[in-house]
Length: 380
Image (cartoon, rainbow, N blue to C red; front, side, top):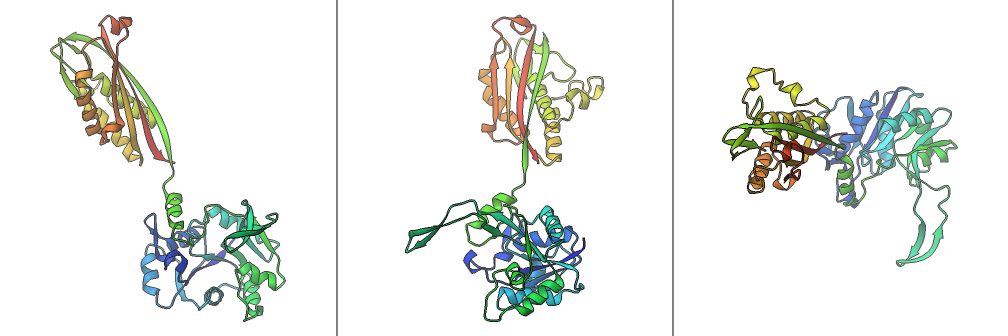
């Protein structure tokens, strides 16, 4: 269904501290959020109604968008809407969505529902049922209540056919103030349908509303958990690599690379959190280039795979299972090395050690085991 749109942005925004439509939320001017949403939803044209002296400001705020044009507004919101209506080029039957620039989080679902809701009606608007108890007050004291049944919080955009809203404004008394376009159409005898509103479609009215907007605009994320496990046997040697730290010892761990079981388990945990196979898929022991390789290369590679997906590692936890060597004297150095390799704060890195109480292959001193857990945050 084709449509055009008007975004009303000529107000002063005094209650919000002034010029709220040009302020920045999550790195973008408030007005750009809704203009982009309307254009992406297929608006044939978007008229942005602005104050007479705001042309340069609008061009800067909307510089990365095409398909819109500015029109000078009037002294009141109603006058600005009528200026926008006069600037539209569509025919009488075309649908127009009239939107407040101060409501940045307009979704495609709301736009679609409005266009559908206009069928068989003279207008459509998104609305939310009033959930809170309502009270009347005088001089800061309650003087009565208000029945909230059948009360709704009207939002924008509001949808009409061009002829309907133009004729309704033409019939509106000059000495009265219109709260919104639905009231204008109702006064002219039209029937306006309610469609489900969106709690995110809040109007930025007061300074504190911008903190809420920043929170709503924050990227949505999911947290994934990964776990890894690795084992290497002991063999002749004079030192062992564990969690990126070389420790003097009377044996070494045997493996194709440097056999750092702690880094191997942690690498597997990271790859597991993003469902990207395991260390053997990316660094097969059959490949001679990894013979004797430092395992920190594997760990950094896994971290880069997370970053390539727009994610970040939140924290890591490694447990080494062995009778020897004693890990505690080297634990801090291990934590610092892992923090360096993964670019994490030290308090996000844990290294622990335990024995198997003389049981199993670790208890018999035949090998060392490591297990790791990691949490990864990815775009939702």
